[in-house]
Length: 117
Image (cartoon, rainbow, N blue to C red):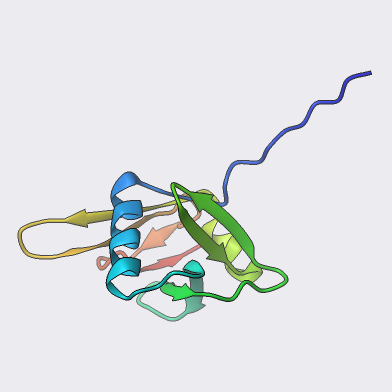
């Protein structure tokens, strides 16, 4: 009798540019423990907005994904809105910032940091 083990895809993924920027920021801020906490809160132009912070605490109901040495922490309430999301980092001549590519967003605002699901 054989068993088949399947692994679920990660809750969120980071592009190579996002990984590099998170590592850079952690180095600049001398963060050696914890990881990047992604979340969703009420507010913003479209009803919900993304939160991005560093955190060294993992809660009982948090989901933790690791990618290229970066730990990503998502709370259970945010997970339903972020499942399948990709975090990117883009920099141009004027500015740089994280970009959220979220398949669950039905509407986004012009700033890209607010959405509705």
